[in-house]
Length: 383
Image 1: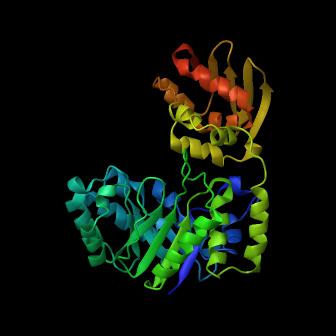
Image 2: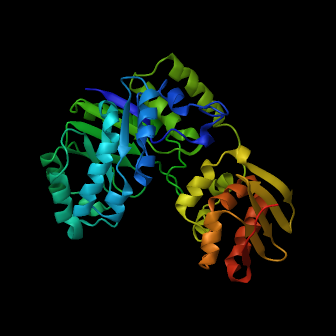
Image 3: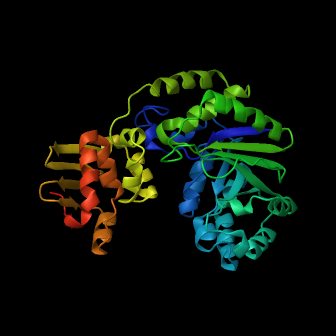
């Protein structure tokens, strides 16, 4: 029985000044001083390079374990089709140098992956998995959460991922020699913007301990990454399970002190006003919003703020929002691509810019955007 606890991801610049020191060059190396495992989210979005795999290996202790999300081309685009197995083999070849440091390979399926439609594909895919790896699956469709599914997973020695999130029920099932827990948060607007309370951690710690007694290995990952909540809760869980050390106690004191800091700008605005996130969602996408929150604050500069105009730069890109003339000027490629297609979608730079804008002006902006057809959106090269 072994329990490993960590976070989903480690390279968040927003953790600087909270968990990491400002400008921390080797975040993974620092992270591995506190945790013996991490879940890698970036492999979901793109295949890693050999060089990147080697860097991960070199910057972590021998006993450290990486759990990787398999690429979305397999799960979300191909939806476990026959061709997806070719992509899976390519992925396994790339990560081969990391094999003795691998924890779990996570298959996260989209909500659209319906059991009635895709069961045959699902069975074929599982029957072709390389059993020299630890596999886990996370469903986002409640239709899968039934005994027949769990029996299928048991047959193929694939772990059912136990999740804490706002939509799916908290089902505890052991279907493999390993067990996996993922904590996504319970935020009303954004799941990940949530800090689990001591009572909630205490409740889960007893469940995790009971599951671990029936498992060879248990992996626990916190995905509530806003404001370094993930590492805070991970250390709290280590403490509850009697696994914490002196460095954990010292870091927990530092992390708790950061919770008392007042948050300003866009994130605080969303936290205070439940309906604001719905307004923002109509102007952007959740992935762009999350990337905006990850942009280093040092990359955001204000050139001018008034009731008529907002001007500044984010990551070197110029932004101008003119309320009087109803014009937004910006220059990143995402913005240019969208306006060329006559799509109005706020890019990550404009969203990040709003982190520095006073709440009344954010309110004004959202109010004005209700009539976005009256506005002009232009690409502008900075001067």
